[in-house]
Amino acid sequence: MKKQHEFATRAIHAGQEPDPSTGAIMTPIYATSTYVQKSPGKHKGGLAAMATALEVLESGSHIVANDDLYGGTFRLFDKVRRRSANLDFAYIDLTDAEDFERVIKSNTRMVWIETPSNPLLKLIDLEAIAKTAREHEIISVCDNTFATPWIQRPIEAGFDLVIHSATKYLNGHSDLVGGVVVVGENKELGDQIALLQNSVGAIAGPFESFLVMRSLKTLALRMERHCSNAIEIARWLEEQPQVKSVSYPGLKSHPQHDLARQQMRGFGGMVTIVLKADIAGTKRFLENTRLFSLAESLGGVESLINHPVLMTHASVPREQREALGVTDSLVRLSVGVEDVRDLIDDLKTAIEAI
Ligand SMILES: *Cc1c(COP(=O)(O)O)cnc(C)c1O
Image (cartoon, rainbow, N blue to C red; front, side, top):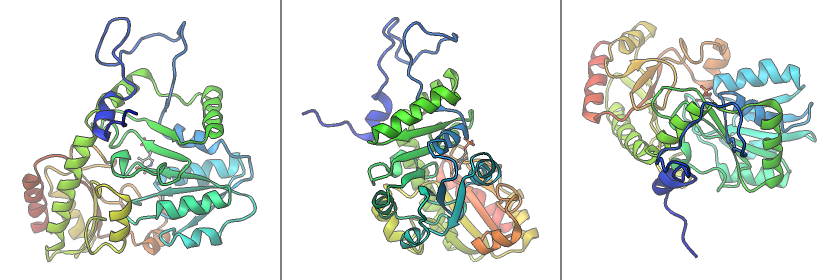
């Protein structure tokens, strides 16, 4: 039997035959609203991917989610679906997977996790969560945006659904917004998602799909560079006297470094640091990088720097933020694929400005 190709090869060739009518090597896009033949639509747009995944549940279901979720996910859960579908959410720290079993109720139908988490880069044991979910017939969902399928494969660890913000690493060039739902072996769940796609209409436009497919061809190359740049930067930051702590799954100092080695192929491009500075010093640091652009989002080829308290996590109440460890001197880096020596020089200049 022919062995399956490796990741980097599949990224370029899987599901992408030359266009049968013209032989175009790139997947063509057609400016048409109808097709004589059936056309499969696998992608969905933005938070529409998550919204559709939630719609497999009956109203009134209970969902267990980890406590430091992407803000937009929390908003969809708490501000929309709690009201419109009477969904009930438990937000807990799932770094100890045994805590999951303790909060399962008779109406728990889904567990929703992110690993590494944002912005603290805490990890969750994928196999342990999937096993407990299966034992209790709970649908398991992993938002794999931070890791990408190159680094981490939740379906192979037993998960039912994987969600990606294609806006981030999958597309990687900061020029579109899109999302993807991936279904594992569960055919019934796949049919249910397909029915929802057709009924609700969460489908990505052809140009966005074209751009993401083009970008996936270099996902493996980009991720290798994101990972090698990030670990070098994380190690360098750990040695700087102005830096109080560095969170990066690839560092030996990360409390779950062993789990990271087990379930991740690389450790990703996200690095979170706490500076030895007050809010004014932290702002000076943020204002003095040149290559790291001060902006929300992540996962593009260009490096970004973000201050969660003032930017991505501003909507989380201070008390809750601080209980999680998201403080004024915490800074999140999305390490791009530039030359790492330039990136380190850039951070050095910014540290000197503190
Ligand atoms: C950005 C992000 C999303 C939402 O994606 P958009 O494509 O921006 O709507 C979801 N989950 C995670 C972990 C993210 O970082």
